[in-house]
Length: 425
Image (tube, rainbow, N blue to C red; front, side, top):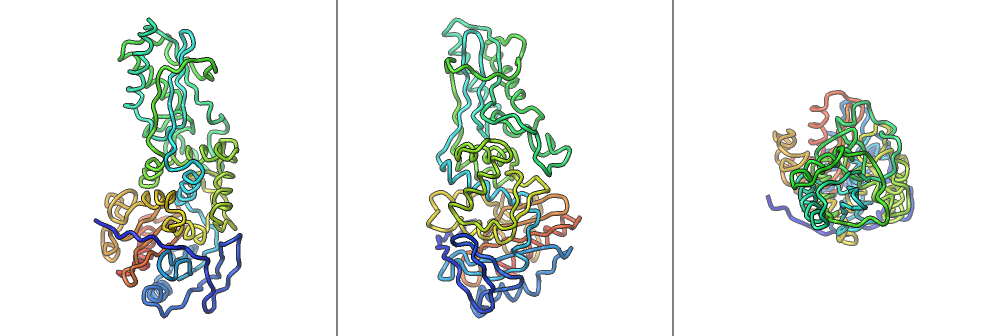
């Protein structure tokens, strides 16, 4: 369904009526529970009045915020309840990860996976391609085999080199037993997209070894393990990833945990941090704060994907970040974050197969809400943009609920709140 694209300006928020505002950083703001902007304006007034009636959490532990993201009131608060309360954000954490990665690496950034040779030893070197597939490795093996035959070699030994990311603790604080490989692969600079494994690099190496055999090159002893490729090794072939912009879009649409952790580590390397858990989260926070003045009071990050049950985020921070994605000042970079938001009832984790926006009263908002989902046991979140039916402007919103155990009911409730922001119900 075609969607109207607006390019608003997110201005510094102004005070209206009884809003209590504390400045955080250069342009961020913090609002008191239940405050709102003037309710006399058609779209905003209706949102304010309806959310006052409808915002009744299942558990009592919930927060939300709505901002004008376009039009003459861009940057103004529409409605807020407990927006400074830090709750589990689940996969809405990926919004910040995506913003940070695109901002420091650039939308056109690519990663390379290389095959290097020294003597009779071949090294498969990972460059943190987040969507490296078996077909990509097959093409790389084909090109590598051609180069080896040109050197009159039909047999080699093989190592994998994923040293771009240091080997540290395999799981983040707050990750549950079984997350690896149930929800995410072991974090590595060399892994095959869509295949969660306890050792991503060795799995990729074995796929490559098999493909080399298909193309007539024998690998003696299988994959011998990890080894850093010598600096003098000769490159035989390489595979270049798609652009970071397209990779980020896919990561957000389908909420791919592996990708988010990889992007966070690439961000860390780009700003001079170590590509480990602490370095990655420090880098993401630094970019969000220094470049965009995202209000991070109460925000705690332990990973880039939101899998950690120790992560904490505020509705205030999430709504602020969502609004940035339609700010023309940043559109050359952040348009790809918005493009990656799942569309209500259409695609990604808001698509029909997930049961989102498929029945009344939320199905009237199909195609008019772009938002990132978040789901952990006992925690549901949704943050993004809604095109308001009454005034035709974008509203940035974030809703989080924590403590409930009926995921379906919690999702339905949050979808109703988002539909209220859209204005068709």
